[in-house]
Amino acid sequence: MLAVSWALTKCHLYLKGLPTFTLQTDHRPLVPIINSCTLDMVENPQLQRMKERMLQYQFTTVWCAGKSLCIPDALSHAPVSYTTSEDMTGCAEVTAHVRSVINTATASQDNDASTFDADWTLQDTLIAAQADPTYVCLHDCISSGFPTNRHDLHSSLLPHWKLREALFTDGNLVFYGTRILVPAALRRHTLSRLHDSHQSVEATKCRARQTVFWPGIDLDITNTIATCGLCQVLHPSQQQEPLHNDDQPSRPFESVSADFFQVVGKSFLVVTDRLSS
Image 1: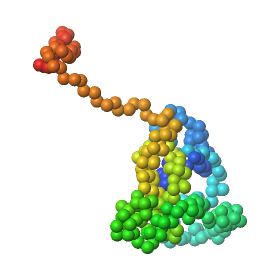
Image 2 (image 1 turned 120 degrees about the horizontal axis):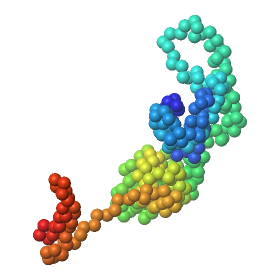
Image 3 (image 1 turned 180 degrees about the vertical axis):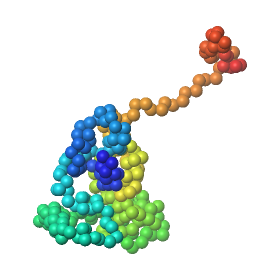
Image 4 (image 1 turned 90 degrees about the horizontal axis):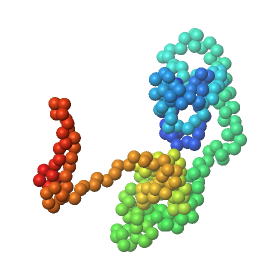
C-alpha cells in the first residue's frame, strides 16, 4: 500500500484528472482493499490514511504475478558500486528477457508509427491556427514586430497589445511565456478539457496557467464553471452568509437585548437598552 501511495504521488502530474487508469500489483490481498473496501471498513489506521490519499484518483487495481512484472522488479533493486560474481550469474539471460518484454510491448506501436509519434492535440492546434485569420495576423505581427503606437495596430489584435513583450512564435504557433496561445476555434474545447475533473475556479485557473492562454481566459473559466450543472449540484451548501447589521435605535428602549445568566446558583435575566446601554 505504501508503494502504491508513493507511485501515485510520484506520477500525480500524469494521473490527476484522468477518467480512469489501471494499477498493477503482485500483492493479491491489496486488490480488494483498494477496489472494494471503503474507509470505514479499513481498520488499520495506517492503511486508512494511505487509502484516503488515493481517493483523488479514479483507477482499478488488478493482480499480476510477480514473474510477469519483470521491468519494475528489475528497476526496484538499487545497484551497488561494484558487481560481484553472484550478480553476474544469469545476468545475460535476465537482460535478454527484459529486452524481449520491452520489444513485445512496443511492437504494436511500431506497426503504426504515425499513431505512436504524432501529437494529435498539437496537430489540431496547428490546423486551427492556420485557419484563424486573427491568429495568422498576430503571428505575422510578432514576427515583424509590433508598431510603436497601439492605434496603428489592427483592431482584432488590440487585446494582445499589453502582452506584446511576452509573446513569441515557434513555427506557426504563438506562445505567451511558456503557455500556448489557443486559437479561437479550440477555446471552448480547451475549457471543457480544463474542467474535466470539475475542480474549483482557482484550481482550474492554476491548471490553465501551466499550459494554455488567451486574452480573457480567467473570465471564461469562471463563466464555464458557473454554468456547469454538476458543479452547481455538488457545490458546498454551507456558504458564508453576509453580515447583517441592525439599525441603530433613535429613542430609549426602542431596541433591547436580553439574556439569562447564573451567579452563585441563582438565575437572572438581564435586559439592556441598546441606545443607552
